[in-house]
Image 1 (tube, rainbow, N blue to C red):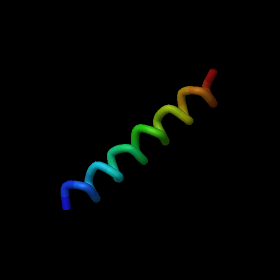
Image 2 (cartoon, rainbow, N blue to C red):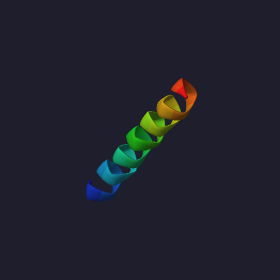
Image 3 (cartoon, one colour):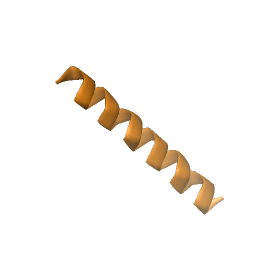
Image 4 (tube, rainbow, N blue to C red):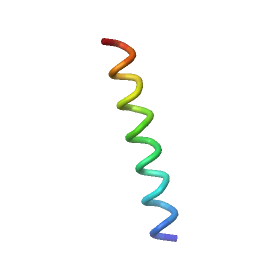
Length: 24
């Protein structure tokens, strides 16, 4: 479960980074 949650957190952070770069 912990590994799966870490993967979800990485995907969420990646999505946020994509939104930030897109806004720029």
